[in-house]
Image (cartoon, rainbow, N blue to C red; front, top):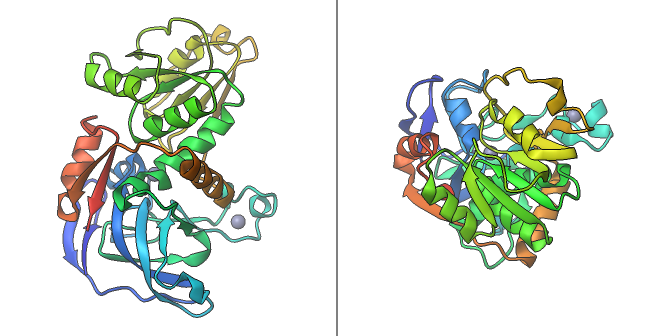
Length: 327
Ligand SMILES: [Zn+2]
Ligand SMILES: [Zn+2]
């Protein structure tokens, strides 16, 4: 099978011809229909997330069809269209797992990081961590929901019942979260890079009532803000944008250093927190919502062999919505 492989962090992915993997006990073999390009892939490829499996097939927004199953997997999955998220395996025995927080499992294994992912024609996944994909979404439109959607949704829940929501960094995750937030009756304010008129117009199209540069304050104080952009300098900016009692959620897995800031930015019971990974409950909740709303998913598709170009375009902020690879 063809795959794009990371052989060393900081180097481009290399086209490779690999044997089709075999589904072990509890696993399914998937023919990959589409795989989203997530910012986390960029952090792994560039070496900002350390200690990946090597060589590694990236990709954790996988939509595929079950073509084989290992021992112990329900036959009902034969031929099913399923999605594979970032959370690839958890131990079920550690404190966080037993406490209902498998997203923080001490021995978790992540797709496209410690397990091979979906930048390939086939992949194997633990059947217990696959989700059924709602009908009505094309493969490419379903793929970004598996991380941008799920983790965006977890971040939105962490923002509490905020009526006025700020979104910093308007890419794959924010364009989905904005639609969920509007569906819930919230007001959305979008922040983009300075001078990104196209990004601001895109944000308005998917429901933001205001869009402007992240260097500018919103027209009124916000109740919560979610940071999808990996820039630590946005943390004080977001704290400044929320009113007393407001929450700032950092949704990315990696961020540049946060500059020091005056305590008065946190004072007034403002809350600063992160969200890490996802639980399977997050996945089921979000996909139920996605089926109900339904979401307009903006994607730019490209062939698997263009994965390096896709990552570079994501890094440069030149993808509208989500980039998706089609094997
Ligand atoms: Zn665990
Ligand atoms: Zn991701």
